[in-house]
Image 1 (cartoon, rainbow, N blue to C red):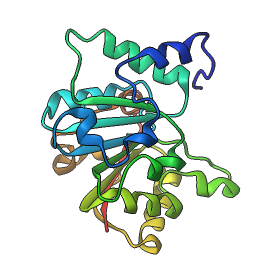
Image 2 (image 1 turned 90 degrees about the horizontal axis):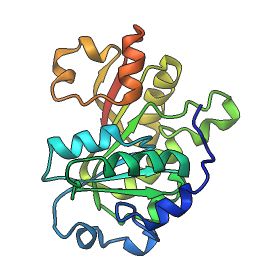
Image 3 (image 1 turned 30 degrees about the vertical axis):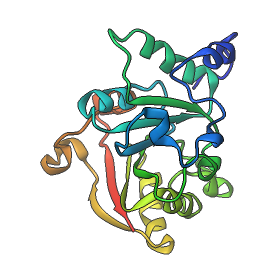
Image 4 (image 1 turned 180 degrees about the horizontal axis):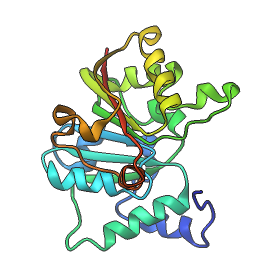
Length: 214
């Protein structure tokens, strides 16, 4: 279970230069935040930031923005960044709810969105809260460039089945699909593991992944 309350976390986040404060003011101005016109990729629900930071090291010509709603979890990402030998200039964090992403990113401002081991919200009445629901796919449609893509990874087969079913009604299609990522040579090429991915795969859980586009 994620820790949700750590004393002083909001204050530390508020003083961090790695965190974008009042992000709604940056809508349409992300090149100004990074000081370049490189593509912007977005991870929603970034956790402690391992995936995002590893991606940033691997692809320095891409700017990465990570969204996390819990201050205590974002704090861990900030601390992890501070432990780096040198700050990563192509990474920024935001503490916010995913529902508000259209207030922070303009039309076609994002090249790719990553969803990694998102909360499954298992009760049917909470389906709209799932980050792969058609409601969220509609939000992503507004942010992504015309050729932008959505990548989703999970070990939850029920959530994965739901997520695939949501694509077509929302005007999306699955470009690539695997139910066992770590035994799929093609889709494993260039794969960067998350903390959850490493943990679940070490337990023998198969990792499911899709790459979707409109």
